[in-house]
Length: 182
Image (tube, rainbow, N blue to C red):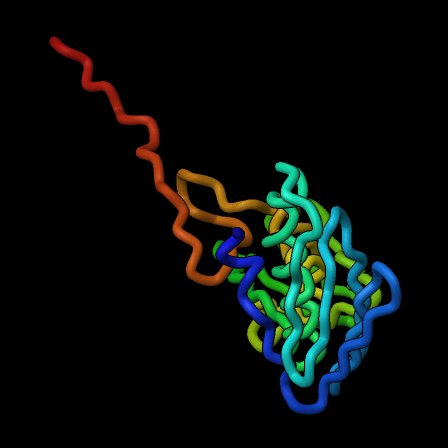
């Protein structure tokens, strides 16, 4: 049995979980989300614990068991705590500023890059070189952060660009000057 799939999910205080057919609806202090189950995976809500079991032992069902459990757990965590991603901007003259819901980035290009925050995503700029992406949907937060990073990914020679906080960028040596032999 899947080690992740068989682990029960604790429901925190203030969160309600309802099962409507193949859809798990979760409502909490930060909002509400729904996750649709795929495969032969069943959900049972017993008090303040959610458990997922599989109804068949096919390879596809065994593969989806842990995935479905992780998606339901992320839904519960999202409506109770939320998710965030921190991005750092490295480079001389590089920076970000927030104008309404639009993120304006100066990334060494001839024009400023503008990123419109999707519905359900909140962007903060505590410093000109830091961006915080927040939301209740883990997949949406990760995709928004990846889209911002894709505007100017870190380059390996000087390390300039947008990177996740704590991300290691492997640096390359530049061209070496060749001394002419006399």
